[in-house]
Image 1 (cartoon, rainbow, N blue to C red):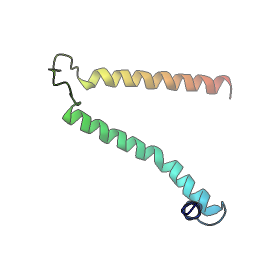
Image 2: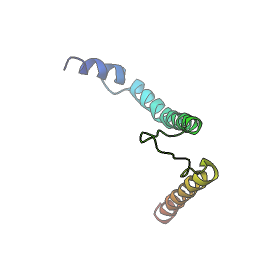
Image 3: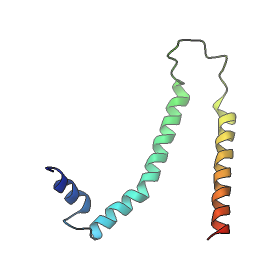
Image 4: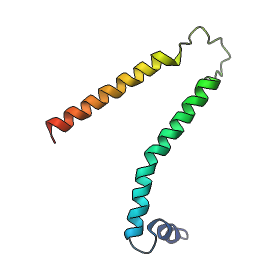
Length: 94
């Protein structure tokens, strides 16, 4: 109740949805995938450098496999399958 009007005015850029609101949300909509991708890449870099957490303290070197090429190929295969399904849906029912 106390902050609601202030937050709405800050997000909308005024008392109503106007050109400023559309510009702000378009910019957010455009930049958010890049921000998420950058954070995912930073996460993968940190995970690759330090390794996963091992709370049990067991020797996990036995089960380790390299990230590249195994997980890279698996992720690439999943991406291609999803892209093919999206293309098929787009071409079958435009």
